[in-house]
Image (cartoon, protein in one colour):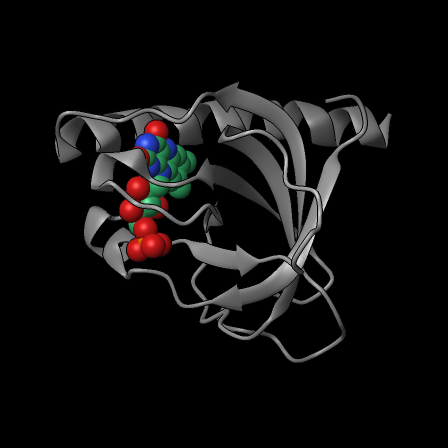
Length: 143
Ligand code: FMN
């Protein structure tokens, strides 16, 4: 991706399925007509914008590792295209927050899985890859 592509928006309520899957996501609603990158799964930095108070374990202005899904959730025959961030190692209620998602690298395309177990296996793998990509990215930016 070269320089990370930033998606900014407000965190809205999704289908609430993520929690049951063990991967609760922050669904980011970008302003209409803003450019969204190709469907797929990405390693990204997630930041709550503004200088508000700490939300759970999340400090606004600080960046967190995330595995992000861009697409229609074909496994569940979804129709709306969403940008969903699974923010790693955090616990917070982020609804209504204005956030930025900086996509660092694309991990894979969106897939329609035959079972929920296969989706979960894929998401676990995505999280591992995202960790590796983002740790390397952090080292690179420190120089
Ligand atoms: N959904 C798919 O249908 N196919 C995928 O390949 C896929 N990959 C995902 C990868 C990651 C890292 C994450 C966080 C989500 C992915 N999803 C994928 C989206 C999940 O289906 C979605 O997060 C889940 O249905 C919860 O949706 P909700 O937040 O609207 O409740």
